[in-house]
Length: 229
Ligand code: CA
Image (tube, rainbow, N blue to C red; front, side, top):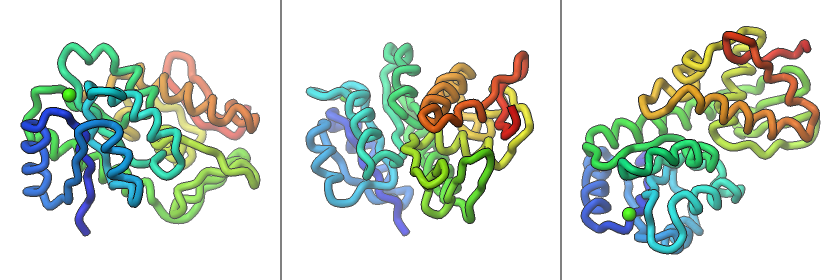
């Protein structure tokens, strides 16, 4: 089955180059020149992945990413952001907007395709099988949903992966570097403080259910999921 990738980029030359490379890699490509076109392109069926340029006319890529994350239908579609060199500083903002990975311009299409495949693989692995239960939380792997008792928890894609890793590796402490390797796949564009950003988001997600204490800080090491205080 061909993976469907939405490319949102206002520069036609980059859009065409990317579309060519992705089609060559057996992916189906749809494209949009701005956020509005992107939203209408995915109104029927969300794509398997969105490649999103940071600088777009009108709504920026970052604003669009936030909006996609906020909508249930697109909340879990992986997003890879394209940024120019000078925009690297805003990486943390992007992570807070729920972006899965970054590719900095100028990039090679080979690198881009490899990165897209890695993110798609990760997204697929999340599909998992069976459900995991611990400390009052339950992950329904096939449905890709998280529950606290009977209440479904709205959770971002990276937080889901992080929680999934924690729950399948409970009661053990992991360093930020280990979590990056395990949850982010050792992406070179992700820094260790990224882990802190997402742990904070995950705790915030669990807080209304009184379950944020499950994600524990292990001083001098990193983090641990534990059902015991
Ligand atoms: Ca642009």
